[in-house]
Image (cartoon, rainbow, N blue to C red; front, top):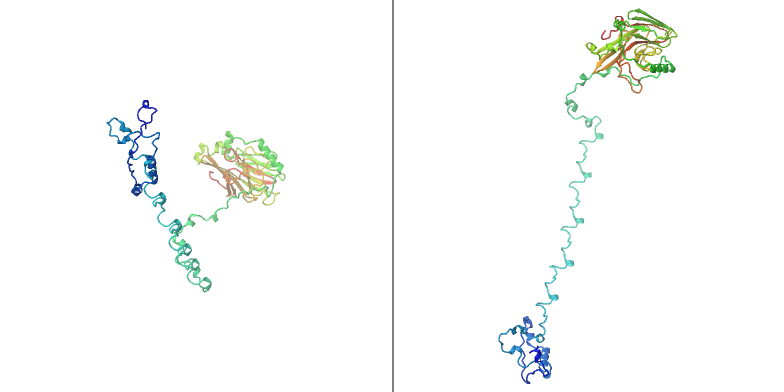
Length: 475
């Protein structure tokens, strides 16, 4: 510590205290230490005693000797001048502090001897515990009696209620006359408990119905007589060159002849035989042995669309129905065996090839007498229909046109000796794969009487209704 100013400095030594004067040693202050260290602080340590002796025995000629006079702490308290603010802190200087109070350990035992730091959990260590992964209560699964225990009761093989046999001895042990195991249950059968349906009275006996029409019954060839393929091709070529004509309007003489049932039969080209007008509505004809196939056509047509169409308003009073019909009497067939008479009865739209039989080409139909087949635009073998013609019998053919829901339904019927023996609907039996179209016969074209002949025959064509054996509806 420096006293005075820089100007006071000189070569003379600083004043030293007098020899023998007791030096002042301030009483050390006791630091606050734990009670367990009080006894140790009462006895000064040898090192402290040595330091004090060394301090007191310093030579007098030390160049840093303390100034004369008491230390500042023994000076009388000066007048307050602000110098107490630099007073040393209380207590002994650091060099005189007892050993052991610097950086004293905290109270209590050291961390290695503490019981509450990182204390193990209560109980034995994990290796000695008995509650970790302890097995469940009860015996082990291998010794349990309730796991996968069989159901109550005897096993299925020893049960007596599953698929138990019926009561009584088996059938093989029953008496031969005991049929109780096949006997019906008591009481009437279940069917008798319901009211019986009287279907027999509602549904007629189908065995009395006529046989159904024969489909796919067409013949490739007739079993009696057949034309050549060249003649058939010639007829098809003629039809291709002469298409069907539209309905015509009859002039007054033709309309009058038709009203009197007195049409005229026209002899075809190449006709071999005779054709004679015998009476109004009656014609007689005969062909020779070498006569070829031919068709005799009447004019005016028996069905004229302008006069007879069931769709025409003026025919509404007739119920929209029109029937045409004629008969042929067979008089002779000298060069033909019995039942082989080449005469055909039918109708045709105009024009038609006169060197062919009716029914073989478009717009025509006929029933042939040599085999009894019907032909509808069919130049092959026709379809079975009736019995072959017999000399001396009278046959008739007719067509009925009826208006149904704005269109015309056509039916064809055939008679023998004044009785109807067959009828068919024009469209009912048509097979799209084998039958050709019926264009010209559906009531939208004029239709004429067409009588076919071949070989030696004799016949009469009856057009007068008064001479008919069969009287159709409308006449």
